[in-house]
Image (cartoon, rainbow, N blue to C red; front, side, top):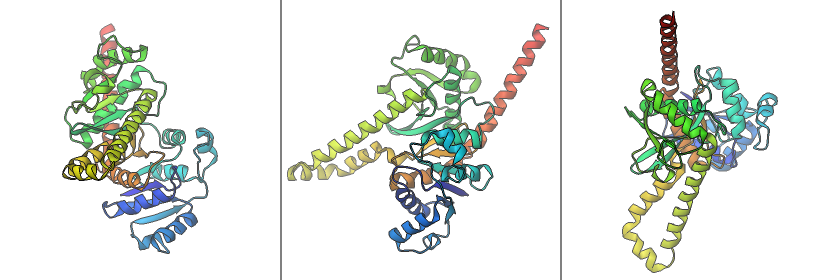
Length: 355
């Protein structure tokens, strides 16, 4: 297996990208290819590890040289079109050509989504691919979809988000019947704006046919109860929700740390509870959960957080290997093809009945 990593994408590139890959390499079986300017990457390898060549760290670490970088300020479509030798475009092309099994980037989100859709291609039957992020929940994990790729959606998009996430949960976590909720301002069927009300009606109508365990609308405060596996939203609402959760997690961690370190008495008093405090801190840390999966494209693509540090890159690389091993994309393609055949058969039956 080959994991393609955009070494030049992200706020902390290439330092965090390189360090994350090096940290992960001994815990995975895959080969990791760092895509970017070889002179810059090699100079960092020398600086961080005192090695002249990255292969001295591990024979499963390699470099694919590129000369350009897509910056955060670049216009996505123009960047993908004109920066042909950028680390991101080259990564997508390597993935498309079968020279890699999964591509990771923390670079320009718009360019990543544009490149994944245009260069790699959508799965047939999927209207819009979506970002699926993993968040902590009570004694479990919560998948949020869409968490940022589609700011304007139609009900059919939210239905397909639910279907894609359900397929992923079944193939990756072995959940036979993952619960799906619709992010809303209330639990009543009549609550929400036009998009949410229409999406609720469509999910209610199609869930049985598409094997979606839809449990209705869910308010944000109830999303982390541990009873929900998947939370569906449009990309705008989902991204606001995601970043709010990350901010609250940082607040809790910071407040807890300052309270413990307030004085010698609080530090001594906290000692017996440190295992529990550390477990809480780890559970609240979004870095433990890796990047967001871009579901709906023909090959595995992962969007790492733009501000990813080496720890988050390490977890994302490990996550990428699992993503490929679970064959989630292949299972998604198979499911949507099966659904397409089923829909066509029903259409033929309706035509025959009318005749």
